[in-house]
Image 1 (cartoon, protein in one colour):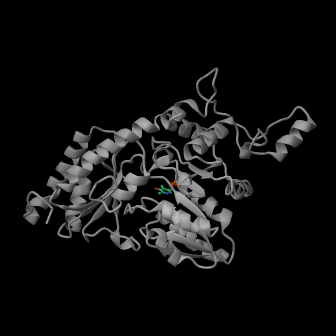
Image 2: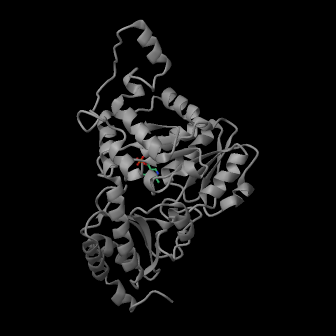
Image 3: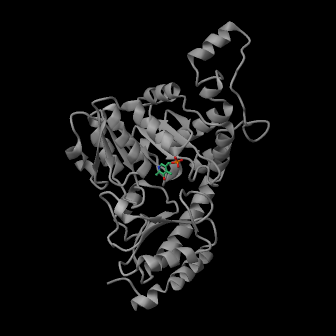
Length: 394
Ligand SMILES: *Cc1c(COP(=O)(O)O)cnc(C)c1O
């Protein structure tokens, strides 16, 4: 089955109502002692207790595992909970953790907090490829990956990094949120654990928080044990919304990506724009890896303005936008702008020192988005005040 067919046919009943019902359960009652004992021995394989799941969550976990090419998958109450649970599954006092400079900020903060548990974290350049070997220590237990990275969209050579780590028995965990399991499958490139902020494209409608953790056969026991020990579980309504979101993931992503490329090309021609950070652009430093490893793109990009664009211009630009709303998160159907403090970027940054922001390109008509951006650039008075015209190619 192709992934589009998996998205429509798996993870739901094959007869009766089309969708898996929303099971609300804590207590499960049994007919016999034998059934009770059997369920307690395999808590995530049968109805045992609400915390271990119901058909609503089992069906979603199985669909995610199939898409990721994983042995099994678990759900977490947020993307960040998927990150923290996966790290706790493998790290012990005395261990060393490596993260890319461009890692998602809250994941960075969690990792640094692990110092209180005796785990040391250091950071590596996301574009290091097989040179990751030079950053490994005798006690390196986990190498974390995120491609493209948060905010700066640096692509990573995941097969090269994962290859070095697997040879040395080092666990790799990849944050796959930007590509979704539809357009990249880290486990098929040598990674041990793939996590997703399902809050973004999988839920897809900005109305629920959820994370997924998919693992290889070898990595799954540590994930399952930690999920069970910590009591990581999700509500049935959120699982239902994620299952519903997955049904349309393929058509939504196609449109997000088409719109994003139109907007990115338009932005590249604006005189105020120094750089558009979006791996599908041929000019992007990560384009070759993106083309080699990914089957598609989503709608999230970084936009760096020229240093001549001051903070007042930038504030006028943001405030003039009507279709792009100012807000965090992404992956819903709607377009968003999110200003980024470049002072807070670690180790990887856009080339220009001008204002930097992230755009999530939604499902609106691309022409309306471009009109909105054009109006905002004009309202900011940037082109005129800078005496710029025509082209940013210098
Ligand atoms: C949003 C995000 C997360 C965290 O997901 P939440 O559901 O918001 O906790 C993790 N990684 C990346 C790359 C994200 O963008």
